[in-house]
Image 1: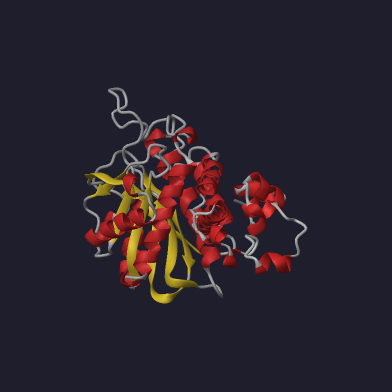
Image 2: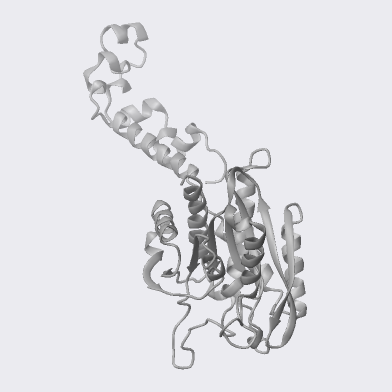
Length: 367
């Protein structure tokens, strides 16, 4: 439902019979109140007329049709009002943000598309406290300028929850029009909309729990191939920087989002992640009614959570790496192919993932 519904209107919607003339209802039901319409009310009360339930045995019985129908209407009305209170994350909005972001086109480092992606992020958070963490990475093609974005949403508790994703596309795939709708695009849209949702929860510019930092990491993808240090450039730089300045000590949990827009959502348990965070995310999935989409399978993933994990930060990679049909021609499905496009991702999957991330924040706050 959109907006509030008055109880009278709600009853009318749920029970069309409620709009009939009361006396005609009684006559249709064979109720004795349909008779003696001209009899004074005082006489009816004195002789125990059914218009006065306290003195008439038929209406005193809870099994009377009027009572049964009224009870049903009230039960349905209560269910609708409860449903109104159970709000889900706006996966449709996250999908639309992802659509606009992916429309930039390929956004590999050093490309014009990458510069447009940076501008897109600046535009989304122009009213927030944003740090642009610019650095130069040593890569197989030489020094490359990269940039992480850190959006800080302050909280009342002393500590930080980090939500992260990478936003660039794969450099080796720069010539095939790879746009990374799921791989980088979907979770960029999700984190931006999570930021919008958290803003709505703030009072006096503060979240009730820990501060939440939204981190958009650059250089997750390899420049040539995923070997040695040719990957996770942004996360390795940021983990080292925060380790040196003491920021890591404030981080209560690092939650990485990767490839969560997949229409056929099946989030794997990443086995290198921190144990208690795996349990917490599983609990968040149960609490939000999404348990069937989480942790049916498990596997290890090398991803942007590893530099933080190696420095002692509780970290988890929330990832659906099983993306698309696996064939001999495409053993990894649609991952890192030109088929990673917007038609492969859905608002439903982003709703599920967003619900779980927001619930996980609440659970870390209460830990």
